[in-house]
Image 1 (cartoon, each protein chain N blue to C red):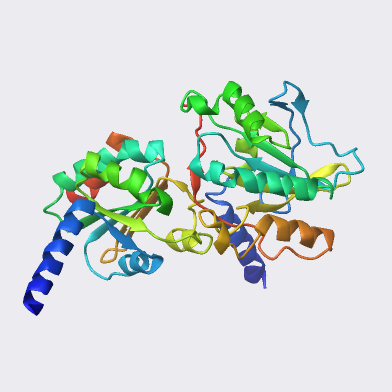
Image 2 (image 1 turned 180 degrees about the horizontal axis):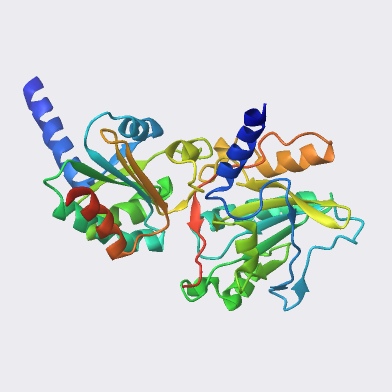
Length: 161
Length: 200
């Protein structure tokens, strides 16, 4: 019986993960990524479904995810959607878009301390993207949306040279 | 000794890189912008009741601006009589969001019963001069003689999404500090917001 319950729980967890396709995180989880010491390129993109320029650039990140999936890199799309709109907006958006990159939902409300910890020059406006690689101290950041070619150039420069 | 003198200058110079617009302590230029009632509005230093202004770059379409609408009305109600009225300024290019057009501004001001002017920064020159980057973005200015000096810039409070979790009322605290001749504890804060939609 115990095994059956456990199995049911696991199946349920598996399906939930697939249906939702995102992970709820706190600042600590992001900090952990920022402090990871290895040669993986981390791309942290802060966005929200209600932010038009953010939504417009998401396909560019997905394209890079596909193009460089064999490289040591991880794109994380960190949503700052409202808690109250998870069911009405956030989940339907994910289901419709079927994003290829990993999606996180940031469950926090105090941002004054956190924003400068991500980057000193980030004013808090969305979208914001941070590129990090510890092994060669690579770091670059941008407030505002990328043009398609602009994002492609960054990735090409990192991986194709 | 010379080297020591040079260091602060170097750091000051570095701190300016990447920051456009006014910083706390800077004298700001006045402006003349059209209100939703069709009249032009400027900061009035000759009005003896005025101690300063709560300038808020905001707009119609941004969910964070919408979240703060009631709180902005409350700020105005609370501080207008104390010499610090709110002036709301929409800097967004309406071509990118029809919702932010002058016509829609009139509708929103009317629907929500804004107690303060809602101005359009059509050329975006005021937002640009202040270095505003997002909506909502507050700039608290204090009247000094015939000038206005920036005293605080940033968020209204520390919890946009959850009003019950507010611990710091940044703008209120700043005004109270100014009124009591005290130093403002935090004169620059950050918050999540919508990027200002600059004309392309």
